[in-house]
Image 1 (cartoon, rainbow, N blue to C red):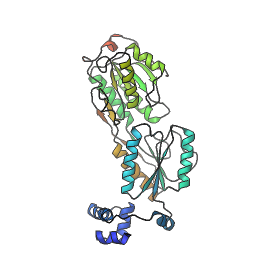
Image 2 (cartoon, rainbow, N blue to C red):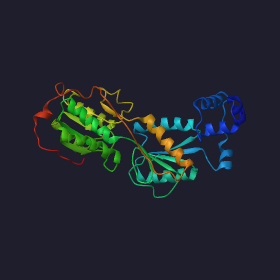
Image 3 (cartoon, rainbow, N blue to C red):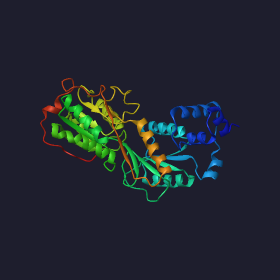
Image 4 (cartoon, one colour):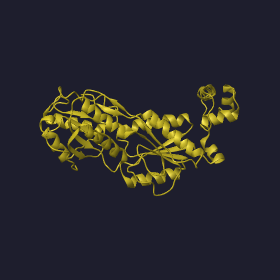
Length: 340
């Protein structure tokens, strides 16, 4: 069986250096890290986690708690978190809260019982944990008292609003996400800020981040009173596009549709979705960077990281001259906000 000393000898470094590189506990030159990791791969080195846990009190496992892995955005993030964790010498324990606060509470307790060293937590809501556990980094939300990493969601909303105005859309409908989530709030506020630049909200409804639309949203879509519908995420956008087609309307010729997240299905949809791409790779890297730093130094000040997003222009949004102009012709007053 390959030992750590075998890896160190192959890489030409000390056993201590090889251990620190593989555990991600200290930074070395890129060349040294490359040699150590290459040697570990070539020799098929597998550390004895059980023995190390007894010796150091570290399990070298991290918990990842997602709100709903049925949402295609989260499996993509989980995949990148697992890859980054493996690079740092950690294994991942994945838990799914199924959009339930109760299940989330049970999952947190289970991760605590497993003895994970730290937790990457994507909360169901925006409330702090009721019981203290291992160090936690919050992803895609911001909760006071926790290190957090999220996309600049306000920037994303703003980019969608600016894009709408640039293409001549003035009167839009909003299918906003659940407002108990700070990420959904920020996406909405970023877009609404463009009202000062001439954007008008013809109607707004609030829907879960899924593919089911309520009757109020469907009724507004049937009115065809806006030229563009901006959605809180891509699943909502796909549902809106489907509903419009069922009503005999074309996307984007009659009504344009925009989403948020750039899930894998966004570019495969017909027409491909205009959306906001979140930097999933960077989110995973930053989350684990903050978590490992917290493990090394628990007294660090709480840190919040917001990462820039990118507008992906595709076929579901067209210039107003190429889309239906009914939304401009109505002249209906002011925003109207209704709950679905």
